Image 1 (cartoon, rainbow, N blue to C red):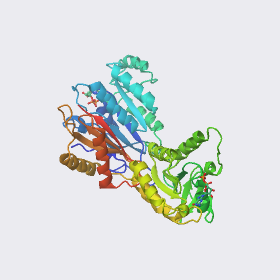
Image 2 (image 1 turned 90 degrees about the horizontal axis):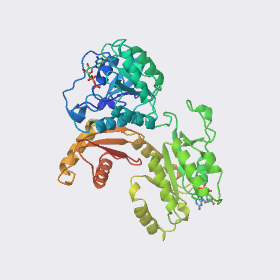
Image 3 (image 1 turned 45 degrees about the horizontal axis):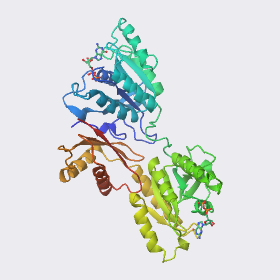
Length: 455
Ligand code: GDP
Ligand code: GDP
């Protein structure tokens, strides 16, 4: 089996999981035979060819620790696909799509001796949509004569092609210099949230559930001197508070304190505010008024958190108003309306009396730890191997889709890419998710599973 483990940031040498955050990722993409592997070997400073003896999917993407001009980065090689399979163009596109998604910058390699092809144009479209910094690499320009061929590649619309010969090394240094200029210091893949420093919390929920009361309850006694927390840039609409003897950023508290009332469009603005807060936050506390029946709007807010891929805590406020008669109704509401988020930790509290407000910290810690969780590729595939052996996918139209392998593409939240030999039933996907949660926890975080189909 191929070694995909290096693709996981935080594993393998040179892949820094230290305080600065994950290393930036440079992906090399392009059609088969354009010279991607040759270029990768050139960048890694190796002579030997990447071994091509493992057929098919297991060679799809491999990450290597690389460095240039004193900078470390992860180099992702998408070379090594089988050359003569049918549906090749779509497979190239598939691969390119994943690689682009997971990269901070892209080297798009085209064979200058062949010129632009339809597949190349297709990949250009993917690149445009993803809006990732890209260098167009015109490879196999072994000498001056090849430069005229390379000029044809302007038509791809990616600007001036970078002329190289991966085989002989011509232009490789300049190419790497240009690539380094495009790479950020720390990988931004999958998140725009700053790492390190106090964790970032969004207090959200429909009007009148008690957001500002909770904020007051938390901040009334404890105020943090902003200067005492290093390495954080302060957004004036955010607030630094202490809970459980630690500092936390509560984001967009200005929006909580500035109340939008029953004007027309208030719902719309409330939902926009929620969206804005979620973008900046790592974890959301969705407040629900425990004393009144749950509403559509409550459910919508929960859904917004899941869609934003943030960790989630559900907090039932106004517990002081809860009378025992309502209790069974509340339990039923939770069962009926919140089944899809059974994984979220729940806290019952009262912002007014401050009863159990301190319990938020533990729920937040749990949800954030899950949000950060990474399952090593080996463990993930061992788990899936056992699961699918015991519970194979049902046969569909005479065929039985098989799971070939899986990898966790990111954390914050955990995202998995499952490669399968056919489409997986939604019910089977949910089954996998359920078992993933049973086995690995993930309390308080949404998880994403995307399936890539291989012939
Ligand atoms: P990949 O499928 O994109 O990874 O392509 P490979 O790196 O395996 O290269 C395909 C073929 O092109 C091999 O025979 C390489 O030796 C050859 N090749 C790669 N780069 C160059 C180059 O710069 N010049 C020439 N002439 N051939 C090259
Ligand atoms: P927001 O719109 O979500 O910020 O909600 P507020 O914090 O302004 O609270 C709305 C109303 O609910 C106010 O009248 C609060 O006093 C009241 N309230 C908030 N929390 C509690 C609580 O725990 N118990 C009770 N009894 N009332 C509360």
